[in-house]
Image 1 (cartoon, one colour):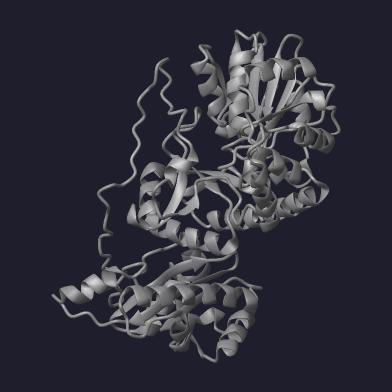
Image 2 (image 1 turned 90 degrees about the vertical axis):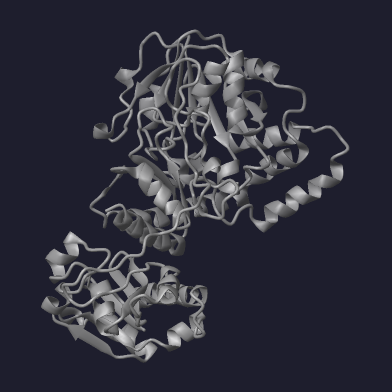
Amino acid sequence: MHVGVGARSGATATEVLELVEAALARAGEVLAGAGSPEDGCGRASARVAGFATVEARAAAPGIVEAARRLGVPVTGFPARVLSAVPVPHPSGRALAAAGTASVAEAAALRAAGPGAVLLVPKRKGPRVTCAIAASVPVRPGDVRSVARLSLLTCGYIGGEPDSPPTIPTPHTTADMDTHTDIPPAGGHAHDLRHHGDAEVRDERLTDLAVNVRTATPPDWLRERIARSLTSLAAYPDDRAARAAVAGRHGLPTGRVLLTAGAAEAFVLLARALPVRRPVVVHPQFTEPEAALRDAGHEVRRVLLREEDGFRLDPAEVPEDADLVVIGNPTNPTSVLHPAEAIASLARPGRYLVVDEAFMDAVPGEREALAGRTDVPGLVVLRSLTKTWGLAGLRIGYALADPDTVALLERAQPLWPVSTPALVAAEACVERAALAEAEEAAYRIGVERDHLLAGLAEFDEVRVVAAAEGPFVLLRIEGADAVRERLRLLGFAARRGDTFPGLDRHWLRLAVRDRATTNRFLQALDQALLLGG
């Protein structure tokens, strides 16, 4: 096997090795899946014949040192030689910078020689690219060999220079996930009841559709919840949890209402508040509008625009609105609006509902309104399901003036929040838990920057750059088709066309760890290629 490597100036050996080792791990999986008797990550690594790159980068310190650590030589090819090698993932930027449309893929295929196949197509890091190729001779008409190659990640069979490549057609499944927008009663065309969990239900896919932090709940929280099961015979008592949440925000307990997730709070608001002219600021979480419509309200929409960065202009909100709903940071745009811009929407006789379900994923919770008592009509909703991985437990809360809390509470059934959920609420607002959430928010920011850097490499992708939440929104022409191809490649992304203000060209991606992001970026590269 030959490892093709491209690296920008200043790329370190550690950066090169991290990407190469991830690619080698994938090569081991590919060989095993294709039935190679020489499979496995360890053997894949042992079979590396050398690094290959463009001649101008063959002496780059990061590449040279990485190759030395693996004990393999570095071969440099002239740019004119590599430019003649057909590659599956050409890049205009690479062509302009290095004289070849993909240094990593072209170098790997050229080094592997006749019959080369990409075991691992181009993977991208912030400053490094790599690809792995091996010589797998295929005889014309040998169906078994071609079938075996189709099991490889890329299925790309390299040809002679200037010859067309061979790309086997990817298989499809009979039960591919499809969605049809059927306008519900009221005539609005967006499927307001579609949520990210539908993208992964009953499927074995890497989940970038649901905005719940991975590797949660943590062990200490699981243990606290498990201990609460010994008291299930008693009716839930929310006093301790309510006091803990109030203390976390510096409020009296009369300003706190515990709910079965933030979603229940939207239903309570729609049913209990005496409003006639509700307005929902979109694109945002669709459940508030759905709940209002279910309660018989006619809902007006304020649509934020991409050309404005999906930022709030308070002047766009109708003056006669007696209920305004907005998310901060907003799902799905990931835009964090200034707290004072939102607070300026408050009016006498108006309820101002701010969905802060993802605010604890923002370091320092800057721009939060939770805990404010100086904004008339303010209702802040919080969720503990996202950061702590408690979507299946259902726990959240509303913060509002005591009269509003009393209205909402009267609309709740008895004992709406279970004992385990109450225990979780108390645990998640303790000082140590808040410190853990802050650290998680910082890590999410780092991983989000890595995802954004990778997405910036695609000319076809336009990202809402001001992302501050644990997800990003991006636009790709024909994103609905790209999403289906990503599913075939093992990744679930959240469709954007169910959000008012967006259409089929939008996708939302949850922020994940670096290794998952790198695998996704490679899959996205392939999905875009397969779409022509």
